[in-house]
Image 1: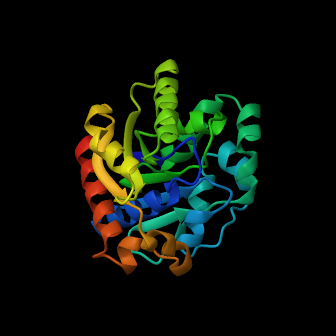
Image 2 (image 1 turned 90 degrees about the vertical axis):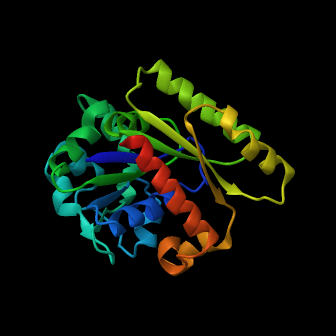
Length: 247
């Protein structure tokens, strides 16, 4: 089982679009796939037409190892399940603060699922918190959608420095540029310079495209409703490149 966290310190960078489309592609290839929607805003749950809500909320999930199994819901797509968001997830940090071995708690929730899934995608809320640190220890890789802007690249450097500081060398960072508008000079400059950004920056680039924004309206992965579009092609390339890195 591989655990991939769609994560960024910043909000509004396409974490949910990334998690939903990559999970859809993984499931479409025959891999048993789960998305855990960790964000209390429940965007991934909404896009997959699954009602948010987990009986017992974040407290039960974190304190009982078997809780996740009963909370998992099927989606409209073969091989793709969802552990939905719950509004109580806004208290994740408080629950972790009060728990023993808090940074290993997500690992304990996911461990019983190891034989059930080939891939688990974590759709994470933004920010650096106790939940983030628990995610970093549960995941094999961070998939980091990054805007082509100076401040976003600076935030990415802060995240990489945090990974180093916490001794998380086993956690593979996989950043990629997203919402790229080729009409903008700065975007083109940053895309052209990505080879010099380090091995953690992938070659794949996701364009700024209206079909990605339509995901919330249609409540489907873009790779489902417009499989031959620019965005779908970009997510397919991204998923291929990620698999090359993690295997």
